[in-house]
Image (tube, rainbow, N blue to C red; front, side, top):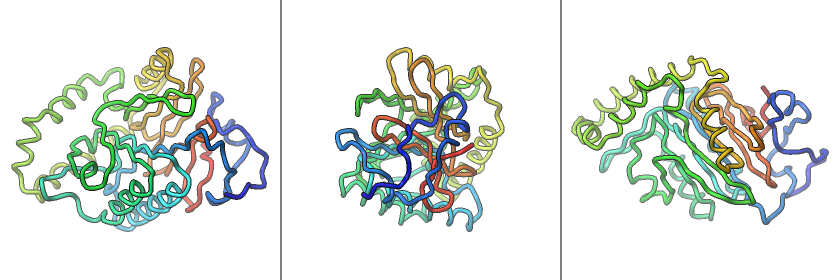
Length: 289
């Protein structure tokens, strides 16, 4: 990779207020112009809440095109990719049926894994019914709960974030019911056309509720991030809330990945630091609030 003609600044966009930290510099060049990092520290990409299938056909084509463009960059640059839930607005797979329209995405995932870029897919609240398709057919790692790992001298904690709201006991009960094996068996009895239609209606209602919900200082996701950092995590990465954020907490960093409905945001861990980016113009740029 060639070296970009810009002053090397800290990659961590989270000095209390995201806008102030990110306004110090802006990256509006292709990935090939990014400076080469320390080869001993892996470069990790994190994204969530793409919600493929939620909008009209033209919007979805643009979103998928940008996602495929990012995956091309990831193939050249990344050591690993982490999808932190809700890649699809609804996902369910039968023994021989998966949602149509995403064959290029499936092929790109398979290609990434084949070229040595492992993909870890954490289930969210819209795609919790992930079966064996991604792991068996595409070679991805699927995680149905939270995930902790260490790399590059940092301890990471990842989870989608649903069910962490302080006053969300009703959802937590519903989550247990929907994910229970008897519920999944009953749903599988429906014809895919009927099951997918019903589930998409429910998914739209859930997403609208999440997007409209107010998150303040008592937000359970932030409180959980503080707890995880106190327990030893250096970087906590979540999704779900659809509002990009990167914040220093008690010596660690809390990152919320935002969404691909309005922000087209994601995070990159490079040279031991993490920052939020966006790809709305087809090139990777540091996210600015």
